[in-house]
Image 1 (cartoon, rainbow, N blue to C red):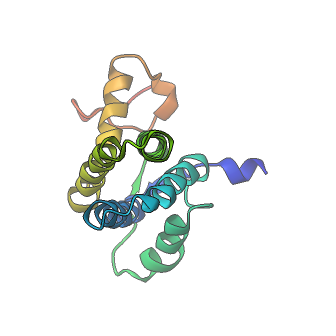
Image 2: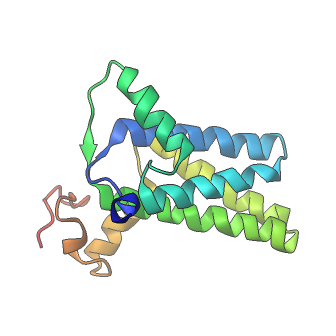
Length: 164
């Protein structure tokens, strides 16, 4: 059971970008088609990924077991803790969107939150720029996240390896 709640470290950036692409598609469908019911699988996916990586995420399973292995590109390992942090931000925003829409009828607010996820996921999918990872690094630099949380993380300002 303990292995179920294990987030991978390192993470294959190719898979992370493909999952982000799936999130982009789900967010875009939610907004363009005005289908707030899609907030539910969006939130579930983020919560599942933050808790277990791809293990309980249908999108994560599709990407890691079917799509990525068939691509003619090499894996690119990146540290897991910043990616988990980024998934946590997505989980907070998507769960807040569910609560806004289904709990308070504030669909406009829910869609603003989905728009924020859409921007961050697009940056990851298209440009390999992980906004959550950048925030994680900034919090490490500020001392709010201990360097021991991710010893393998590169300091984004100096390119130096973080030390414990």
